[in-house]
Image (cartoon, rainbow, N blue to C red):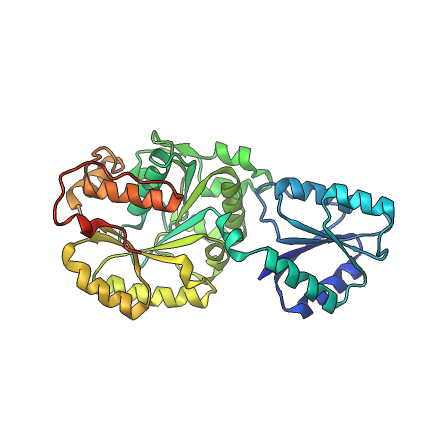
Length: 392
């Protein structure tokens, strides 16, 4: 559904607009901006699809805000609500300069708003909005399936192989382990970002990150389990927004945590990679988590199943689970316990051996997510090679 903001200085008029919007049944959320604003929206904030500029006797504050919003989001739709319709020449000229695309008379009638929203909805395709979103969430079906390992190695390949500016947000509970797997010692982390919310823009956010030699950047997790008790979800949303404004790719490691309060973050993700293993406990939990995600409003087409520590003998089990879940396995990451365990203990990502099957699978998966070309390294062909292709 569409997201809308109302900007104006007349509470009564804004309330009437909001009531009329509600009657259309076409709007998912409505944000209120009271003019004049002490601080204009910045690049880290989530922008609505449509902004209704509730023009008063002096329309200049509305037009100033509109021009600012167009600089932040070029495709935002600005609609002027005016008692003067059609507008006079000067009002029309000022509106056009600020980026206003249409006028509607006020008080706005639900029928007129419904017609307008239906027209704009056809222009603003959900797929187009989703393509602009950069967040990929990684979650584990249960503890111990290697969610953080997948997040780290995927992030490394995105940064080094696809050359995408990539940040990994360590939101895992109760403690974040991303830095350990990269042998980093972050000075700042999630808690620092939350405590500095009033200063959190792209520049400040960059100062909180730690960079690995592969150019992957991370926002470290919490160091004490009780810290999460004092962190509400709204600051997390802001962190995600700023990260998306700063990077080409944003990964968020949620570990095995699962709570309805995180639905706002999950619903704005371009993709959710659900990591599991091909064993009964993991697959049993996977099935129930997929049902729960759907119940939270997450579309099933945005959920991807990644099977970690895959063996050739798992294929029959996976065919059965695909049929039961009515969802294909997105990718399989072959089991290589020796290399994976060594990498974890040394804090070194799986990338040194370019002919290693597991490393190549991470590289291929990164290319697929980034939309870049993957060139298979030259190696001796065998009958097993087809087993390591990404499943769609």
